[in-house]
Length: 416
Image 1 (tube, rainbow, N blue to C red):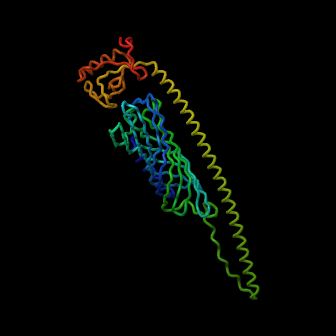
Image 2: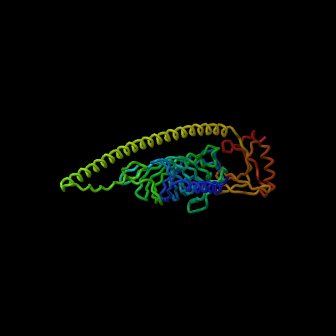
Image 3: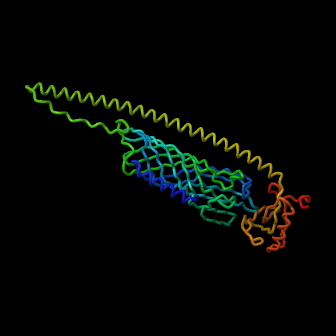
């Protein structure tokens, strides 16, 4: 099921639900501070042996929300929010006689659908709320900007983000999910809040090789709510309107003027004391409800933190085992490639046509030059068969080279 179908189903559910609840609609927008964590394995394609420096970027978010009241101070909130994130990374590699400096800026954009449980507590003159729940995101847009400097030569490229699962070709996986936490205040129809989306999905297309990219975002937002407010900031009992004070009825006529005044004063005092008693009871109940809601919120946040810590520890152990296994395999495995060109300047990976099919090249540095190869085989015999096809495809000088742990080896015993 593609993203557009998913979005259509969710929009339909929200529309149908809106006919059955006293919901509140709203809009909000704000600033994003992303915390994209990049953990790239040295065995992911393309192979990288240099050190990268990653810095945090910035973004924004906007969208619509709808809130469904459940019971007193409890409600459920969902919506459709567009959120842009990103990060910058740079690296430097010495390629004689100059140093190659590369800077890359990623700005992916996601369509997020949160589903949170919300608690709103009256506190004069504001309402205070807290929310927690899962969210699901779908990568839609974004750009990647690359700038390379080699001596006096400067090159730049600006292209769209490639979404998918193809290792070495795509930038990010399109499906994201995680847990969102939020808190803020409501004043009349206006709302201001702070949210944190803890990304749990691995967005790296090279996840099978041990790479990981997680997308967590700290957001600051302001919004406006239409229609019925969630709850007014009064000290009356939550969920009930303030008790309307009955007017003092005129005291019946008495036989004397003094007696009438005393009766009216006594009735007024009785009504005042009754109102004080009613307000006191309502205030105590409201305070008890507030303390209970605060404890429930603290318990929910602590449980979410423990769950996130356990998931992170399990994932770290799994990745460590994959990396260790990959290192053992890579260090003892010989692969063969067919070399077809040699250049004094680095060209990187590109595509050529071999035997009528597109093939991606792989480049390595050897004896002061950059060598371009194609194909990857576990046996010398398979590489020789592919060498014939390469020579017939406009590369008559092509020959087989061997690598161990991505380092060229020339042991004669490997070419038999």
